Length: 246
Ligand SMILES: *Cc1c(COP(=O)(O)O)cnc(C)c1O
Image 1: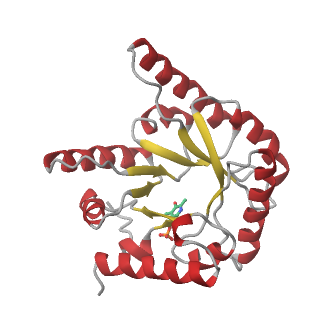
Image 2: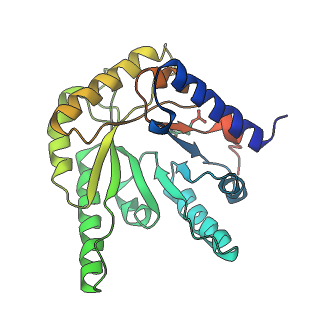
């Protein structure tokens, strides 16, 4: 059985090789290690290996884990904080909590969530202003795409992308980074990754700076890299299998 450090190095090497093959610069690709269902010790081990970007998909798990990591790092006098990426479905009533630790939200999938993010980021900015603090860094967000034919599925459909993006761009506390998608497991991922890339090109016509693509997981990240992915969200290939029973 390979260790965490070995798996981490192997995945990094695979990313480097896939970038070379796709004629892309390795520096243009970020690896987010998705640590859901794994204890903070695993996050701390990856931090010790030099990793800083971690992903979680549930606030009730991510919040305590982010705090626990901060406490661990504090004990050892580490200054360089981790970046937490929220990648799962986000309920509006969890936004306030998520904003306490999240560096970015990859799953902006509906107007009501945008409204909740706008409201909470405005509140934080106002509180800071009253306290005489410098303006907080804008929250990095990705618009999650609905890649299916089913309009009831989560995510923004390609036809609605530009209209929704215009609303996102109006929110001062948010910085639109790009698009996010999860390729279907039932078919070859190429079709979905091509659709994500096409959506990204369309979005950049409106917002040239929103050029990031959050796509690619353990089973398909090399394909995602061929279709322009800039932010890979990789769990099991690095962490090992998740324990679904608590
Ligand atoms: C769990 C998860 C991942 C990582 O999945 P793996 O297959 O373990 O790499 C990526 N993205 C999202 C949104 C997830 O929930």
